[in-house]
Amino acid sequence: MTEASLRLSIFFAVLLAMIVLESCFPARRSKLTKRVRWLGNFSLLIISSVIARLLVPIGVTGIALYGSANGIGLFNIINLPNWLGITLSVLLLDLMIYWQHRLFHLVPMLWRFHKVHHADSHIDASTGLRFHPVEIVLSILLKGVAVLLLGVPAVAVIIFEVALNGFALFNHANIRLPRWLEYPLRAILITQVLHRIHHSQVLDETNSNYGFSVSWWDRLFGSYKSQAKKRDEDLDIGLKSYPPNNKSAGFMSLLKMPFGKN
Image 1: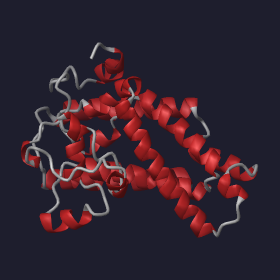
Image 2: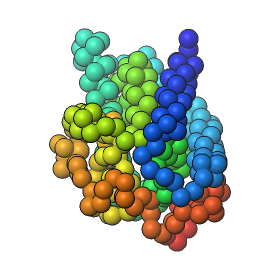
Image 3: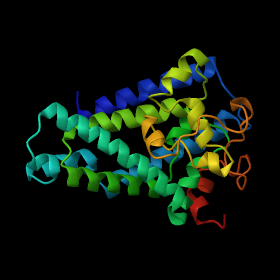
């Protein structure tokens, strides 16, 4: 099985699992129909993937292979056991994504593109795929630079990318884990409840819980928030400047959103 087919197989398996769980055990109700939201969200995923592939054809794994072949980057210079190099690489890439996420909130120009993700008035697995093409390309370039400088092994890139996509689907899923499971799990992972706090309309709640996978970066850097002002069931999701309607959730509206006045 090739890298691409492996990643796609895992991606669709996790996506299907989350969709089934959302259908059976929904945590919240959407103000818009699935057809309206999913058409915009999945269309954005497709066009972002195509544009990213055209602009960065070799992908992050290709950059890792290039670095390894030419001895570029920290882990290609120092002699570490393979398991340690892979483990450190995955951890450092996850840390980089945490800070990338914070920057996309703090830098106004970057927020213009990231707000496309936050403008969703409801959160489900499809929201974890709803990113503007410009943000996707910038993220790939940043990961590519990090991979080259660190000398990240290609296998670590694959592990990280699979985990990143899987966790994005998991913590955006419209489910609520039972309290006996969710509370101990959040000691390690960003759960659905924690990530819905990040999608709150309250600014200090939005600027928290930046992690996509583990919760310890937020705890370490002071951005962890365990409880919102409102209960999870009553949390106001999205952005006030983009009220839920069919137009704002449409594909062309999502593409043009960073270039509007808000």
